[in-house]
Image 1 (cartoon, rainbow, N blue to C red):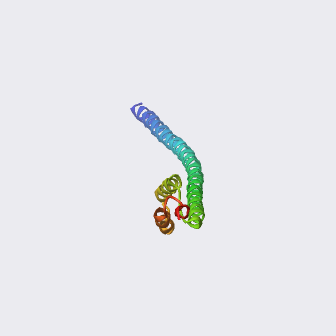
Image 2: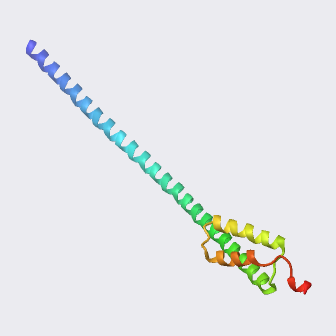
Image 3: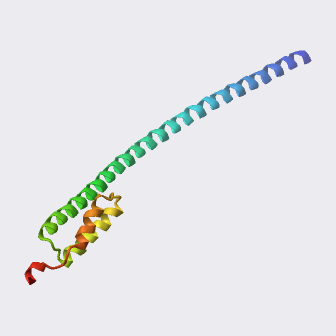
Length: 131
């Protein structure tokens, strides 16, 4: 009878161990599936958000370069106009200076520096009026 009880206990223990192992395996698989799903979802979200940021950065860079090109063009126009007249009004000189300052702040190169130096050295009145 003791022998039968020991066999019954061994079977019960084996069943518990087997069920426990099976449960651990099931929990492990479940955790793996949940983890993979969460990681995949986060990765998708990050890629999607980063893609939107990249598109925004590209658009911002285009605006930046467009404004810089417009400032450059306007400075060149001022130079061509007032260099031909051989004088520049004070308000136009100040305007050119403001445009140049912003152009440089946007990373504009030194190409217009020579034009600006020449503009700033032009007389502010038409000296031919007084001759």
